[in-house]
Image 1 (tube, rainbow, N blue to C red):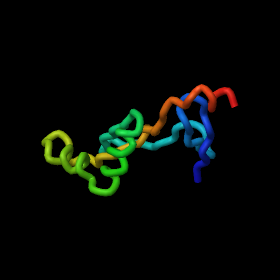
Image 2: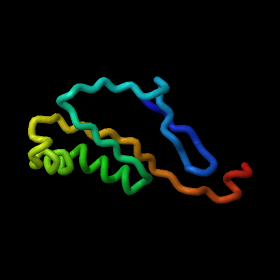
Image 3: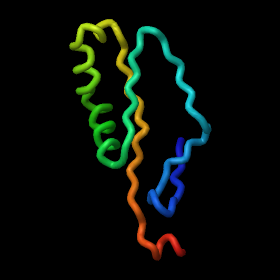
Image 4: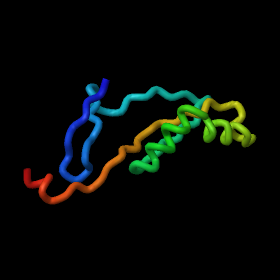
Length: 87
């Protein structure tokens, strides 16, 4: 479970209960990290539902025998107004 934390410049952040990045990999995996803001987050959400990017990678000869793993690092954010920062 994650918690939301208010941030003066990014709006909010998702604070993980377990800090750090822990992910075991194998030779049979190809890992894709998606970074960015709200557009990247929407892309990740769409990808997790429809697997378009993963299926596209698997059509290429070099990825046919690989598990495509998509990792979401995107975080929607926006700059808040000065009055919110001062509060």
